[in-house]
Image 1 (cartoon, rainbow, N blue to C red):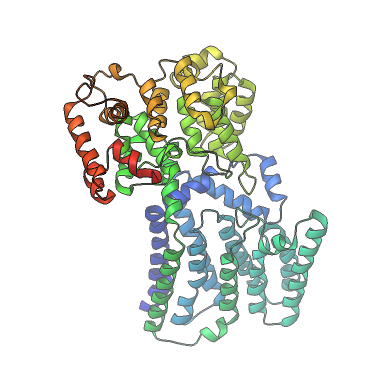
Image 2: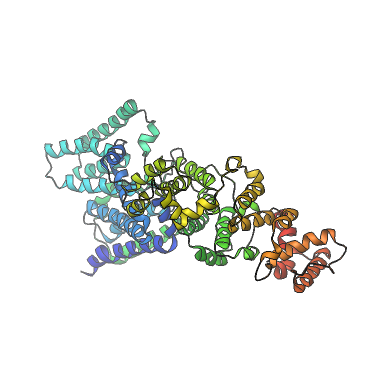
Length: 570
């Protein structure tokens, strides 16, 4: 009884719990990321279009489950249950295994778990593996007969079209249980015939039909992990008769521990900390959690441009732009990063453009990011933002198109319906606190001149057309500071317009420019704090005296002076 408890309760329970905790606590933003790059719709047309591709049913099921990744806990639980169910189905197919044999059934799901450390691994892979094994369990329950062989052959063709090439596990499982060569060869022939026919009829390359069309987001880069897991699965089923001998419980415990340790090592080597960190800032930006962004930045000390773009946006939105040099700054690219030709990174800059009132720039970044999604899906997040940009611009018919699609989803239906009430009603849009404000501050006369190489000019137009756009002014000043354009900064900064006094970093930048032309600092303007002047004199003595940057950083690392002289190789 104790052995049964270990085999069928304790080990699977610990395994499922470990998977859930891994995704929930260590990899939650990879879970969220899956959801934002699909647009699952409860329509017959969506179902048919998805099913029309080989492996389409597994893909549809995977997408259905992925919509619940909107909540990290739900997504983590779904992944844990799918992977744990694969182990349970493997053990069931293998039969009454020894403790050692039972422990080996955890190898394929552990390999699949390593695969899902990749942000572009698709949940339909797990669905395809699990349904293949479950179908095999159903077929082998039929008494050995000619009828069972006929059902297995027909199911081979049907499962290939529904689940894709990972349905080969169905062939392996049925062949192992049948223990006759002819049925297995016949099913393999049907499998190969399906590949050839679909190649001829639909034009898919053989490598896609043999690897799987929907198992990975990119089609030109095909990781081996799913097929390593499938090979391990097939091998365990093939040798399962030799694993039925009686063994000692400690052998199973030792093997289970070895599998788990090996899996932990594989996860450690595959864990993409850089991507998880970026996805964290992207998620917090998407949810407007500005204070949370700053709290995370204090812990992480981010230095990548896109992460810093999120941090700087949060600083401005919380009224803390003057604190920007409390964080590592990597130049203008950390304020408004240049467009990158991929589907993930343009989203943070697009949010900054949206908040600034550069609506068309936001719309361009968002639309192009969506169109670059490698598996050609649509994005619920992008659809929301494109609906908003078109509402602000007064393109109500276009906005309505996006909103009608979102009304067919589960988690965006309510949001879409409230916005649909604004379509065709400019007065209602103007009265909306968020959209009305964006309409009042967006560019009207100069938006067609957008040019990143002249970003100072573009931000200047925002301030010129809308003097109340304080966020645009903060971005203009920040751009000039990060670009080390002191003349531009001094020209635009309203030094007399700060009720509580000029922020310290602005005083530091002004002093640096002032010292470049003035004979002495005795006649600095009244808005410069004498303590800042003393600190500046000390910094310049240390800097001119050859003090190592590491030493200077301990005292002056959060000043504009240190940034000006020591960041970006200057």
